[in-house]
Image (cartoon, rainbow, N blue to C red; front, side, top):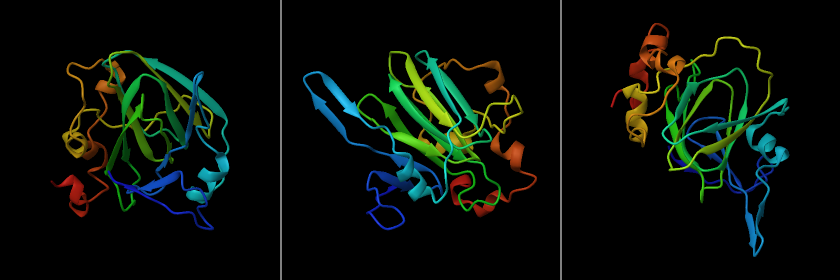
Length: 206
């Protein structure tokens, strides 16, 4: 779950974009300007993400969800790249690499977003996203995506799969509020056990 600190280079000129242990997953950490009126910050610059990711990004849809305290959403790997940001409240964001053939298949990255943690995440296609409202107020969660929603089935796994939760210490709420759909997704092994050798990934064999 570590973040790799990057120094500016020709291929990654922005020191505010951080790579992670999961290939393609980026943490966007922009400066905040405070004064007596409040604050101002640029959440992202598209050119910086493109430089770090090594590919062009075309945003086609902007979504906004509100979740009550104790809600968990996910774990879904929609067919698009996604940039997520918690505008109000706070969440524990958890992502899982579901890309078969990836060197980090099944690996988890987690980070608190919102409140004092004013980060955004760039999540590439095939990496599943989820979050839990960790504070006592509702969380407004905004995300930009690179493809239109078409209602097709989304690859997803169980929110309480122990192979996943053990990697980040578990969800920070008891008796979470979860949709019926999210309650019935298969575990990682149920979904991918027939095509992936789990023994190749140490984080899945702790």
